[in-house]
Every structure is written in C-alpha cells, then in structure tokens.
Image 1: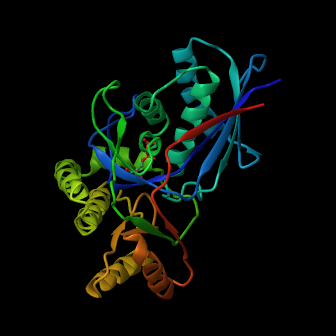
Image 2: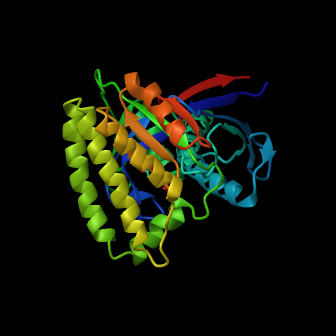
Image 3: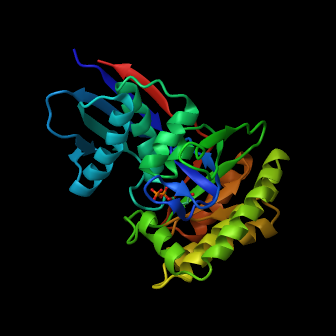
Length: 325
Ligand code: DP6
C-alpha cells in the first residue's frame, strides 16, 4: 500500500505587485504585495515517497518534465526533506490548468500545491503561516496562493516573510481574465524582475510608489471600496510595467491588444461600470470588477478583442490537501 498526498491550489492575481527580491536564494520580496486567489485554473499535485529511487521524478500534465523544471522542483523538495530530516525521493504528478508561462501565475498554484502535498507526505504538520513561508521558496507568488480570498505578503527575513490571509467580509469582487496569448513568455518573471532591479533607473521609484500604493489599497480594502481598490491596482500594475520599460534592454510584456483592452476598460468606466485592469508578466489583462458586472464587462471586451478567450473568476479557496492510497 502506497500512500499518496494530493493538494489542490489556485492561482492568485496580485493587485499590488511583487516585482523584485531583496534575497534571491530565500525569495524575499523587495516590497509587499496583495492578491486575490482565484476560483479558476486549479493545479492538482499528487506526491508519493519512493525510498528506493535515486532521484525525484516530475510529470506535468502526464508528460515527463524537462531538466530545468525537475531541478527546480528537486531543490524545493530538498528544503522539505531537510526540514523533515528525511531522505526519500518523491514522485510528483502535477496537472496544471493554467496556460503555463503566460503570466497567469502558474508557478503560484504549482508551488502552493507542491508545498501542501510534499509537506504532508513527509509528515510535517505546517500551519498556514509555515506553509506560506515554504511555498515562497518555490516561487514568491506561491506564498499567497496558500490562502483563500485576499492575501498580503510582507517583506521580512526568512522567518518573517510570509503571506497572511485577509478577511474580505462582504467585498464583492471578480476578475474578468482576458487571455490574449497563452504562449509561454519569452522572459520569465524571475529573470525580468532581476533585470529590472539591476538596470532600470525607475526601479527605486517603483519600490517607493508600490509601498505607498499598498497603504492606499489596504485602506480601500478595509472600507470594502472596490472602486478605490481598482484605481490603485491599475496604477500599480502600470507602474510595475513602467519600471520594466526602463530596463536595459527594455522588458515589454504588454502588446497592442493589451492597450486595446485597457482603453475598453476605461470606456466601460466612463459608462459607469466599476472596472480596472491589471497585467502581469505577459500581455493578458485581468479586469477587477463587482461579480454582478462581470458578464456585461466580459461581453463588451469580447467585442473588442474577438480572438481572446475570456473567463470570469471569483474569490477562490486556499490550498487543500488530501491523502489517499
Ligand atoms: C508579475 O512569483 O513568478 O506575477 O518568485 O521568481 O518565482 P519568482 O517570481 P513569481 O513572480 C510573480 C510576478 C508577478 C507579480 C505578482 O504576482 O505579484
């Protein structure tokens, strides 16, 4: 009888972005970030310990993963083994419904699920704070996907930097996700944020502005003021992209279609809707809005970018772990 541990996690979209590290090895963020976990695009990861295998194995969507992905997962599993004081290798099978590498936070759901499943398999009984800290070591944004709804990931040292869940109360929020291009991005966010920090003269201004944005975001969130949250989120995303445009060579994830959607979102606001855009390390645009306006917004955007695929996501659950045989 072999025991397996399965974890399900969802991506999160940052409304205040994480862009840059103070420590690359520990994955400590240079500024705090704030996100919403989605109820769409789950990643399901099953792990099984194998005491006789010489190395870890990893399959992604039923196919053996490449050497780079395997090395990254093995390095993460080393942290779990170290913490548990154990040596078994791990068989990992992951199914990821997010278009991988398309700036839709696939690594967030992936490492949150892996942290949940692997820590359970090695008998570590982690609370959400510890699980967030562990997931962070796989991918920074994964620290936030541990939590349902909204999360705040603070700066700090290894012990102090983890995401905490925030009570959204009766906040009514949805994200209309406009997938303009689901091909893998040319430059990973890990490489791009390093290049921005090292070469963009706008980077220090980004950090300052993003810290200020966070204060305003938290005030709007406390007031359940979705319009205020959206204003700050859109501005924060544009500021992050502006910092990248200043890198040498410049990093540009947004395409002409992204700006077409941004204009359409502004036009929807002019019609009285609450709709604000945010963009990550890819051209896709996510539109923050009240759930009740989502279908109208999705329909309007489908007319503007007919080739896009558009889905609406609400607030999703945190990581969940199951054991089986
Ligand atoms: C633009 O978490 O993928 O989505 O920590 O290097 O794995 P690493 O980076 P990652 O970066 C996410 C960047 C972002 C903004 C965000 O999610 O906060």
